[in-house]
Length: 342
Figure 1 (tube, rainbow, N blue to C red):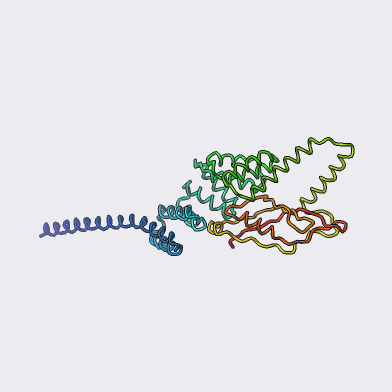
Figure 2: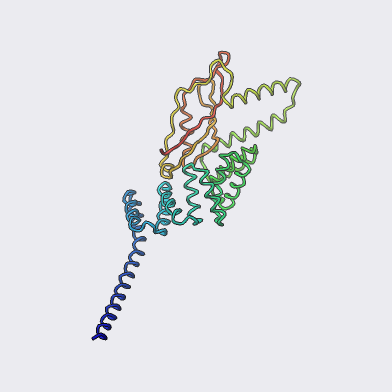
């Protein structure tokens, strides 16, 4: 009897193990197949314009499997590839908690932090990723932008050069290099670099105009150096230089200073909003004595159409010119536009 009971127990145990393995294997297969199916369904919904539906499909999956790092990574890349960096960032933020030493996750997160104008944090993450051996043009571009903000033009130039070497088609890296060269007062090199940028971004009227300005400055500098001077010339040149410097800082002593009456705010582009892009753009404007804006020159840049938005807004500023001795005079001033999602 005891032997029979043992046989029954052994038989039941074998059956249990068999059924358990079938259940686990089936469940594992279903889980493995579920995510690719969900991702495809989300892609189909997104292509049909149903962004909310696509998000719901993916988020429901993550409600069941919140620590599925493969799914989090793939979903993040999915939104990034669809130019929705603002959505993608959240998934990489979750990933960095689960995989704090994953260099590829760091590289993506550095880019997203840069878009959100968190340049210091972005630079720190980029440095960590580079120390782990990741060689990515975007990481060096992030560092170049950080150095530019801190007026460290030498390091900004070095990082821009590396970014361009890794990705010769990285147009924003060329802009970073352009501003670094300007900061180093290497205008001829800056002009050549801007030409390279325009080859990658043709028909860009803003930067084409900026290239014309730089070329004129170079030409004027060469001509002024070549001109013979008389005894009176040094005093004249000194006076002109002083007036120009005061103009550039908007600090000309006048009986009536420049008064801005209306200053339109630039809006966001859809692309910039989807990317979660934030930042401050600086422009130098020449306010003419005839109440028109004569020139607008970018002193920094933001991608995805925000530079263009700021320049268009600045061109519609209404103002009263400065007066000196009762006569209207032209002057320059730096205007800042802050883009924020909050």
